[in-house]
Length: 134
Image (cartoon, rainbow, N blue to C red; front, side, top):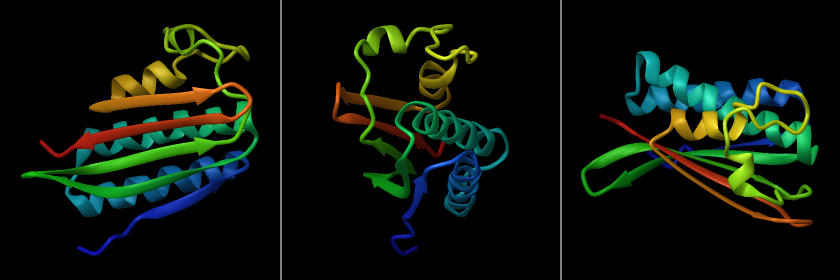
């Protein structure tokens, strides 16, 4: 398996669908199945929707990961938007800045095995998520 990383520019709702499809396709190729495919696609949708709603544009990169004897998928969502002032608050279920369901970031974290977020106000946000094959 070669480096079949996929990068999707996120500028609109249509790009959310594209990112979700590319992530799902790569996950399938890596051996994920059933509910894991749905979890990965949903997590990608959540972080992509955040980019569209808050930063207006950004990118999502999905790539295969190998770590000792584990394989998985790596999802990195990057934007140069306004950033998140209070990450702890943004990570609470039910917290929403624009009347959404508020499951975005905490939902994505719950769906994936590993989740990391870095944000600088005025500079943007990077979310890194990993899901391992079990």
